[in-house]
Image: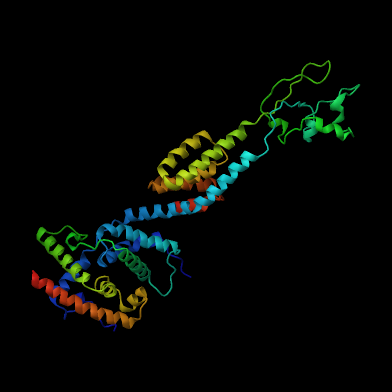
Length: 167
Length: 247
């Protein structure tokens, strides 16, 4: 029988993923560290992760999604896409500018998606989770994942094209 | 639908869309994992202390009340003959009877005396062993014609008073630890100096480990924690200290 993975161990492995996921879900950057703490404190209070059918990352993502949902309900200020920051800075100024613009563009497109569609889109297109993992994370049928992803993609694509046409 | 590819990997997806999404993937949000881990660790430890606080306070108050209400030894000077067998408190408090004509209460309460009615007239020796009484105060000898013998005045022992002080300090330390770990750490150092080897020495040592972890001095906390676990492997506080020591 596999041992329980404690919150601190999970934090080492998945904190960066959680931070990124929360940010892409629309959590302002200044709130991300607090919410990451909240996610792993929830995990700690649940006694850590007990290996089973779910993967640790899926488990963390599920809790992060719930924490982000609660955060959203608290009506915190929305993310300002102009203040987006990436983790890498050793690029030329021109590339940095391009990257910054791309990040802001994507974030604006994400902001146009419904909350449920956004979560599916971020997990699939950015975080690289499989449809089955997303279904487990969001506790929805796999068919619903596909359906939401389809709608999210359509909306995202249209919004992206619109963004590019404005530039 | 396992064949479904993310757009970034799908050559049929628009080039700019793929590039933008790839940039997002390549530039995750900068996140300081070690700092976050230290914060999480502190929150977990603090949460444990905080959850235990009502119980610790309850036990502390109980101990304080227990010490405060414990029957104290009388400050009335007691006549204790050091030569008398101390096994019986009543007899230990009694002077030896004079050989010829025992008079008054002394003879009435001797262990061989069958006169129980006279016993209440004598002071009752408290539960302290005579040897434990620290104060030696010469008082008049009850024996006629003999030089004054050294007898003891049983006063409130320093250890009891020290325990009361230490209990009060400990209660204050626990309450401070719940909301101000830095101040509690200073108090703990002072208390450890004042009450070295005291009743709550072990708890203070454990608390110091937890407090150091709370204020972010994890190396010191772990070092002291290891030392504590080595000295008190079976301590009631060992599980919490072990959680600090174990990364």
